[in-house]
Image 1 (cartoon, rainbow, N blue to C red):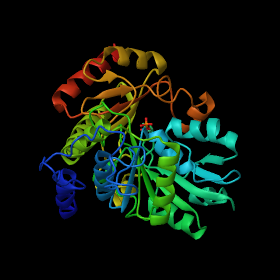
Image 2: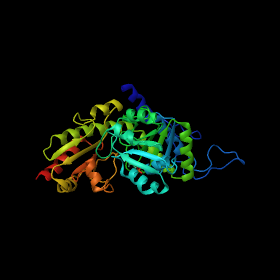
Image 3: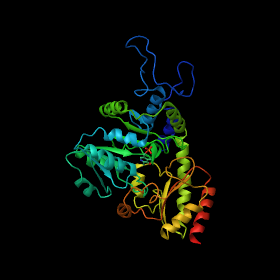
Image 4: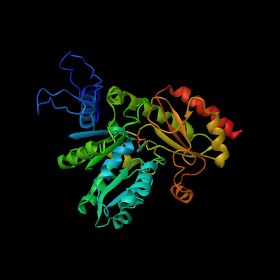
Length: 387
Ligand SMILES: *Cc1c(COP(=O)(O)O)cnc(C)c1O
């Protein structure tokens, strides 16, 4: 484990990047260009047009592939554009099977957009694999996992899903946004594809929207690269530069997110205003052991339920000062989300209740500030709730 991280820390700084050959610039330049001059007909330097390829993007794609332990990386203009590129490999009548406690945008893409083009999809509970297996159809092409899930941090057994899926000749993709390759490497667990919202921890500074796909399967890569160019949802070179810069500190940021999240989770666990706390690193987490078997750590996301319903949540959200009330996650600054009204409002109320997303559920993205200050902020807000 230590060794693995020693290599990983080095990869964060160096993977995918070479000093620029013309000047020796140590940092990958922002190749802010749409086209490339050709020496003569049919003779170019590997770049023709920036939708197809751009050197800043290429460096980032190589870095991301190396960090996930894959051979190929592809970047997209958002996490949703990355997911949609995978969905675009399906034909009308083919089927996409996903876990049910999934990023809301993934559900919306399949049910509100791609369904109209005849792509079939189901969102089911993956905690019972026997039940899940019954939902695999002859037309199922991909199984989609998020682990831990959003916002309830349920853990799915990635190896077990992969084994089952492969027996049915179905491929597995993992949305690895919450864990990042610092803590979890789905390709090593047998998955065929990894997706990220690079908007979150990979970039880490809340100033870019981007997505990526990573695989070691060359045929799949070529199909996805064709779609990347044909559909055109590519990020610009400046955003690629920012994510490359963010990746250099991924290891130190994730370590600190985790330390702070542990402190916050322990603090919340001891408070009378709180019904329960969900963090994969707590022994009280129902799948703590499973999570430990497939990762090297627990990340920076903590969810908890306040006593007293929506009013308590309103008071809490109004009272926190350091935790900013905002959607998104994974930046250096701490954020606080109310899933029922904010990120998961598009999930129907009955479905929210079934999943356990109550009106007093709070999701924290714990940043890299001093833990003492974060805890003082939570202490103040909880006292307001309890008063
Ligand atoms: C944010 C997010 C997405 C979507 O990514 P965008 O970059 O916002 O398009 C997908 N999955 C998870 C887990 C996310 O948090």
